[in-house]
Image 1: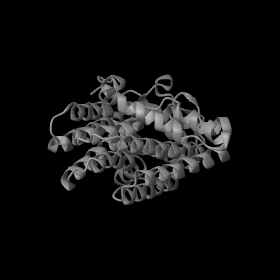
Image 2: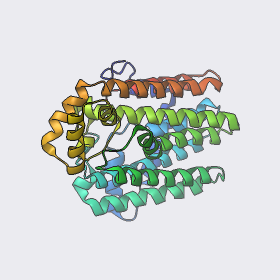
Image 3: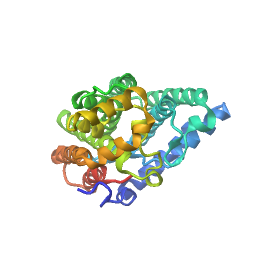
Image 4: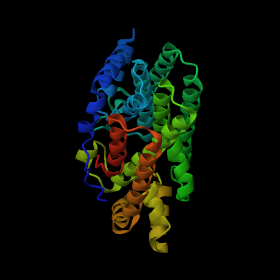
Length: 329
């Protein structure tokens, strides 16, 4: 696999849910309305900043794959996008990020306080939308998930500047921080379609593996990507003192002198060492290893769909798993 070449165009294969996605975008615009204009201004800036809308697409595709014919899945998809956007707002404040999707981050434009509070608005609006759907099965799924995502963010914060994070612990963090929302997106699609318990578990397995693949490729691209393609600064994870999989792999496969340099860099924010460490990661097998792990997760996602009947929606979900491991942005 060449991690720099995506063989699947993301935009092209979402045509199967284009009308549904138009419905989601309409709901997002309606639900962004606030009597406080500043809230709407920041929220709209973020929502319109060019995200891939993968999580809402997952709700829509999974619901249709299980034969759902209604429109309530559009409300669930919009709600998922609000939850995701709220986490991005809070993330960028914590990380002191200046770029998001190739544009100035909300905190860089509007300030940290406004970003945090508008993130809170998006969370609470999402829960108003859950109530509007009025499906009791969805409440425990969403409430447990948002709680775990918050725990994942705290786990990541606690792990900053800790060079002793191992792969097992790191995978626990990315499940909570990233993969859980993918998992829940798929589960919501299955639930709204009244899928069986076995089918809902398959949807969960698909979403979980897809989320892991996405996060691992993000980790890889932070070392091997290009800023103008990614829409964010390459090398951010290292600058922020985060031990992601490429660096964790390098730490356990390099000689003692490199290990000592990484440790000092992570613990003490030694910027002078950044270029050396970036090159050491690229010169090692760390990126290939991360790419293989992402591909394994993508394969697991596709395999989880074996219980679904064949349809254009199932085919699109399989394409999405391929894209997750082969994308370059």
